[in-house]
Length: 503
Image (cartoon, rainbow, N blue to C red; front, side, top):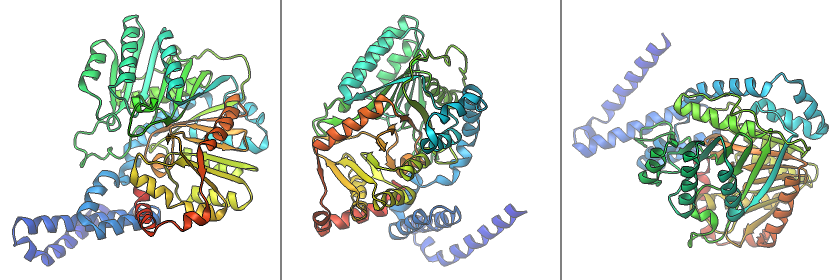
């Protein structure tokens, strides 16, 4: 009955609109196109209004559609259709949750015992992470921070060559360049030795990857699967939801996750970008099972083939205690914006310091307020961002947040040595996050991400040391000087800020 009433109302509104536009319809093809665009903008505006999004997002979309109807209409088709997000990914969410609870064991009493070791202060945060992310904390996982591309790819290549049973790769960007070619040759060599290789790559992030690269790997028996294939970008609802994860699992016991994709620019070989500052993490032991589960469920989502068996989910545990390690998957399939809410909890629970490094800083209101409140409370809050852009709109949108941060007492640093791509959060020098998620709305709400949360590990201390080292190559913004910057920059930043909820 309700649907019938809605159809009747829609037809009545359409009839009224067509009556008012009858002169344009009679004026030829351009008049018809003008009417169609106008009707589409009006229809989209009603859809956005009734979606009950955050007021900031609603107003931004209405302003863009009202000011630039044609551009706004195209932009909405590409990036705005979030209303089908829950429907598209509801099945994946429930299947993933069921798999995690079955394999990781939600009722395992050892989970509570492990969390009790953290103390009341940080125990609450890891309890939140476990409930939202369905994955337990591990104290039997060794971790190693890998600094920049040279060290990261050196360890990746070394471990790939040691693979005996399987190699699973999942990447946002894969390039057919020198490092891409080297990894391809290793994978071919390993599959000829009987190692099972599965490779999941994002359709949009890796859109430039050549067919010859893909076909060569396929012809050797490597399973190559595209995540979220897009045949008609303007009409495909999944275009806006990308797999931003970057991870490798080898024999179920060795894992890699962090900021580096597969491409020469991550080794500083792009002359336009120059030195690339990034951070990756190598894991060995129990927590690799969670990373494996994330991959296997993504694989199942795209192929309908499940491999939840002991041969893939029985990591070789490390007997030594290394501090707490918890892997959390975030994405549009999760109803709680899990990584964003854990970040919020980390910042809100800080007692001494909050240090953040992010190449793209476009926080939503919750995170932005938490950062400012922490600084106003006397917490040592620092933000490290790039001095040079690789995405200009995002770069200028990020800078629009700086005046309020500086006024609140946040110390903002711009990295001068090259492009800073590390994605780090460090709280009180004992709790840290490293992974694929930026401090921006796209990572919080649209992309599939994965982060490792570390508590009192050697890697946590390593991140503290590297953050301090990065500050040596950075320039701290002066509040007075930044407020007095040229009016043109302020206009540019404010304009980019207007689009920030859409980025």
